[in-house]
Length: 441
Ligand SMILES: Cc1ncc(COP(=O)(O)O)c(C=O)c1O
Image (cartoon, rainbow, N blue to C red; front, side, top):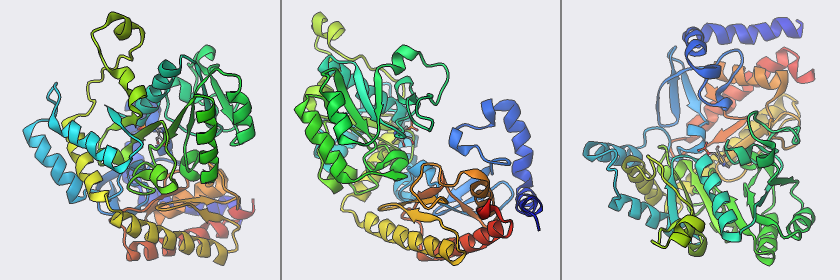
């Protein structure tokens, strides 16, 4: 059979199993800009719409049960609806969702972050990782009196103006329209090459180097910890601020994140996702002398000339503070990490064997509790791109497995049985795509 007719078979099965999602698609396109709420949820031929979730599973509007590896874009390290997060949030919901004032929980939340990440002396809370990286850049600029930020090609730091530079190939075209060239001109995007970083730093105008410490796209393009150590040395030498963007890795690679696992001490750290227990919330933390730029001193010269202003209606909202504190407390000691890392290793091996059984030259890789798949056989940010990747994504949903950006996350709720079921689902899905001849095209 030709590829077209076979491709039709996967799509036809997808359409049949997901009729309710297809119907919602029409409404979504009329009501939601672009039909979705987040770019990575765009999916051909239409996104599957979820009705509920629990543990390692979610159920779509058609009643299909799905083993979930998106895990809230990496936020749900304990899985869906874990009692630690839910009970803390429920108790707090009953006594106040917003005090419009400070509260003890925000202090406890910051103290818990400081315990897990000894590099952090002070914390400021935000609502999203995008706000956190924006704030970290501003802190570095105010602290050094310099404008330039070095980032790395392919590294993602959210969607604010400065973060739009060199995220996806071709790297010389920003990921977004509507950003002034002058703004983008303050960002230097480099390959992960310490010689080039040294050269850029030596010009003396660099405020900070920001990096996803396990590599672009939460380790889709892995980098060695020695590279981060090199950045630490170079930034110290040139009085620039080292920002580790630990929005994904922060409490996932260990309870203290990448930095504790690798023994690297940044000046500033950005955190989101797990930090708020899977609810909306984020933070910047780091050296007191940098973070204290946020302090109001009653001295007009400082307050209007040196200080960073920072309002934000939902900063440290009590419900996120409650869930975040409870989850971070539960993670301390790394017992959860031992479980989810071992499961993910079993998953990575099982998936690699499944591709190998079908003679598809794909690579399954990753660290700790995340995995990536690249059909090219080389680490890549869009490892499941192209016709074969699209078809595999659909075929996997037909088999009841949902990935995010060609990979995913294990959680405390995943079990050995989930992993076995997932490997069997991959076997079937890879077989379906292979039968269409799409791996050869
Ligand atoms: C490394 C990194 N930084 C920043 C962000 C932005 O976080 P948010 O989506 O909460 O704005 C993300 C989001 O996935 C991320 O992966």
